[in-house]
Each structure stands twice: as structure tokens, then as C-alpha cells.
Image 1 (spheres, rainbow, N blue to C red):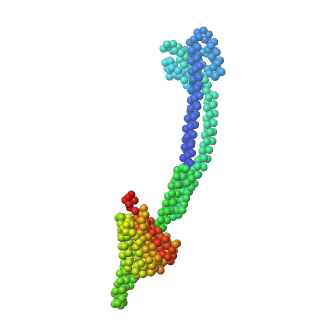
Image 2 (image 1 turned 180 degrees about the horizontal axis):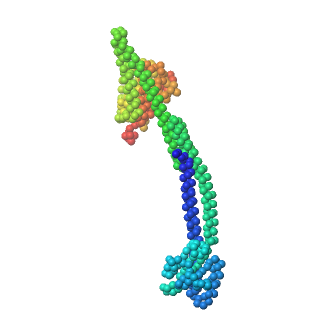
Length: 474
């Protein structure tokens, strides 16, 4: 059978309260009763000691002072009886001398010289009394003793009245406790229900949830942790969606980029096989097949490099080297490509300028940027400049090409982004992935890269690579 948490909590709290009140009331009633009866026993003991002491001191006029004590004690509702060693009553004088009403065990205690006290006796004297029996010893022999009786009807009435008030207090306190428990239990269940509802929303795929966490208790801490979890789940879900979108876009982009060279290669190969291409154009077709195949290889290599960088699998072997050597290698590799578009590569760098970097990756960075400059520059200039300050080496690559719109500058680092879609058939840097790799490699060198451009006036890339630790110390 399903029992709601609200009722479980309410029943548990009320049960604890009832148990606590019962234990407290019973303990308090018992304490008060023992306290009253013990006070009565102590009072009877005091009077008994005083009477026995006076009997010992006074030899004459014993009867008269005993009567005086009787009058005094009567005002206290106390009765006393003197008895001899045989247990017969010797005061007050009665028509017969009955034995005092003590049990066998009580009389044995008296015979040994020990006192007997009974806090609450309801059998022997026709009413409920407290009694004390005190022996009077002469040496080791019992000469007699005194028995004091005090009715406890008034004390019992007071205890009953006290218990009645205690019962009223328990009922009132229990009622208030139930009401308070109802309020708090309801508050707890409302807060728990809000967390449950939020959990259901997350289960349904809605991560934009927040539960109140202002209370400084365990449920409040649970709510705060739940909100943190929801935020992380939301971030994770958004990241998953971004990755999924990137995956789809990547597949679409790669498929699109590979379709053109594959179509060209396939068409030319079929034309050559079926002798549809004239003999004079076969060599030209083979050159085109070779160029398109190299385009596919570049695309694959660039994607492999990009994924290696993102997964931290690419390790750098950095060393100090002369920057002008790097520029000359790049100029040698791309000289012919620049001439095809009537561009001129100019190096402006002193021989003593040292750069701390991985040789292959630095060449890759500069080659990608220069290829990009060649692609978007016709009949222009491309400058490779090197500078150095106290903390870093500065590489500047500037062209006089078409430039980039200011709103597109940040987008050039995105993989497969092309600033000019009309140039997708260009043979160099056409995939839109090179600059993305460039930025990743610069960051892997702990460096910085920035771009400034003006439409129609050219573009300038500025790279700052930190010096080696040994150089900074020196």
C-alpha cells in the first residue's frame, strides 16, 4: 500500500511527540509523588526522634508532655502511638492494649533497631497513610518504639490535580505540535514535490528548470545541488547539440569539398578510358587528375591535423631558429603559385631574429596564411615581416588583396568557412580549414594571432610567439 511521505512524516513526528510527552509526564508525576511522600516521611522521622528524645530526658510528667505532643501533631493531622517491646500499645491508653499493626518483616526490622517507613499504605488503618516506625533501644535490647501515622488524602488530591493539569498541558501541547507538524510537513512535501516535478521535466528533455533553494537546510542543499546538476545537464545537452550540428556540418562540408575533385577525377578517368578525350588533351587531363588528387590529400591531411590538435595528440618539438630561414623556405615553396597570379613575395626580416617554435608546424602556419593571401590577391604584394621584443617574436604577413569585411573577420577561424564562396574552385587554400588549423597551432605554441583588414585594401595577420625561458632569463 502506497503511503505518501507527508503522512509518514506527520505520523513519525506525532509518534515522537506522544512518546516524549508520555515519558515526561510519567517521570514528572512519579518525581512529584516521591517528593511529597519523602517529605512526609522526613517530617514523621523528625517528630519521632524529638518525641523519643524527650521521653529519654523526662522521667516525670511523661503523660502530660505526650498529650501536648498529641495536640501539636493533631493540628498537623499526625497521629502517633507508643508501643512496648512486645508490640502492645502503651499510649494513648485504650480500653484494651492491642498489638500495633506491623507486618512480620517490619517487626523484625524494628527488633534489630532499624526504622521502618512506608510512604503509601492503603490497607491497615482504614485510610491511605504514610507511616514511620522507630525503635527505642536500651543497649542491644528493644524497649519499645513509636509509630507515627499521617493521612495522605490531601497529598493524593494534590497529585491528582497536578496530573489533571499535566494532562491538559499534554493535550494542548500535542494539539499545537500536530498543527506545527502539519505546517512543516506540508512545507517539506511542497519543496520535495517541486524537486520531483523538476526531475520529471528533465526526464522529458527540458533542462531549463530551477527549484527554490533559499532554505538553509538539507532539502535546501539538495535543491541547490539539483540546480547545479540541471545547469550542467543543460550545458552538456547544448554541447551535445553543438557537436551533433558540427558533425552534420562537417560531413556535409567534407562531402561537398570532396565531390568536386572526385567528380573531376572520375570524369577525366572515364573519358580517357573510353577514348572520349583527344590524344592532345590526355596529358592535360592527367595533370588535372594529379592536381585534384593532391587536393583530396590536402583535405584529408588538414582534417587529420585539426583532429590531432583538438584531441591533444599533436606534440611540438620547439627550438630556437632563425626566422628568416623559415620565410625563405615558405617563399621557395609558394613562389610559383604567387607568380601564377602575378603576386610578389617580399621578405623583411633581420638575420639575427630568433623564433622559438616547432619548425614543421611554424612552416605550416606561415604557408597556410600565405596561400590564403595568394588566393585573394591578384597582381599584388605579399609581405613577410619579422620583429622581436623582450618577451616574444612578432610575425606579420600582409597582402594587398581584396580584404575581408569587418563582420566576417571572426568567422575566418571557423572550419570550412569561406569569405568568398565564388572562389571555391581556386586551387590553393580553398577548403576553408587552413586558417582554423593555423589558430589552433598558434595557441598550441602558447602564442596569439590577430587579423586586421579593410575591404579592397588587403589583410594583415599578426602572430606573437613567446621567447624561450632561457632567452628571457638571459
